[in-house]
Image 1 (tube, rainbow, N blue to C red):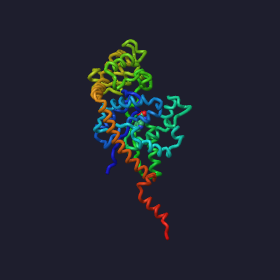
Image 2: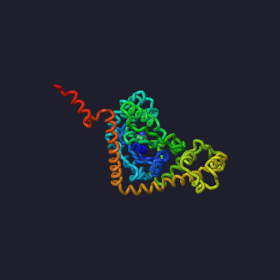
Image 3: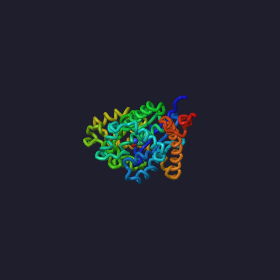
Image 4: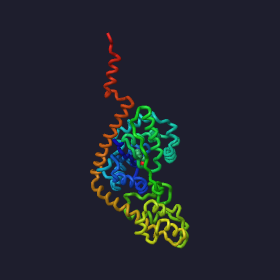
Length: 366
Ligand code: TRP
């Protein structure tokens, strides 16, 4: 039998998802889901991981479960094709984490670049909670529990996949071929991989107020682009020559727009590069470009908003979708955990051979 193709990925429920999440990962997930190429798809709301640095704010995590679920459903993840589930409800993930901890050194975790920068961001340097420090191992449990072959994620998650691969290799070498080596799938288009905030700051973040959320109204999106988007402070009059690098309108167009949209919304240019050339020469105004970008984003966001409105009418139904997805995820993870325990020789009561052999050893021969 061909090896099954399985997707596992997820997000921490610490806030609503924004268009950076969408272009960096969610859109691709939906395409993969609809490609029909995958045998199983698991999409996880990583609440246990969110608690590793929000342990003192459980209400925030709890409130954001439904936000992330609505975001998932509204972008087109389809519960008939993808199991949407909640991490903390799968206790097998914690057990796997505990066993994998034996296979990773403290210095290896300290070298993880994503963890390093997160420790700085959270001012954890002086006292890192063990649970937070350990989350790459828990992420390896998430991935391997489902025998995932494919993990669609943003570029920042590559160190986690590397760590997972190392754990899989160590486990299989020591205990015998049991776990599946996963591959990360990251966006090929650089602009899509790292979408900055509308203000041009490196990252979209709630605290910086520079996000466009998937759940934002058309007016809110328009305002964010018209009033907040960083363009080129030196491009004062339309006739002035403009700068394209660091200009968020171009960065976003790079990430979101396609040729048909260029023809429909900004006719007269053969390519986005020609638009850039015109802007650099001078004579192309920010407002025209911003209107183009608003149209481009609305093409993506209007259907998402409409689907969200439908699901919002039936919130208990959304929890039910999560419950069903969690049941399916539990079944898959529990099968893997049994195999792991057998490989690690901690399946005493299931091992008739062991009991028989021990019995024979202690049998008195008269
Ligand atoms: N670390 C991911 C994030 O911050 C969330 C996550 C948890 C995840 N477990 C995962 C992603 C397993 C992919 C696979 O968004």
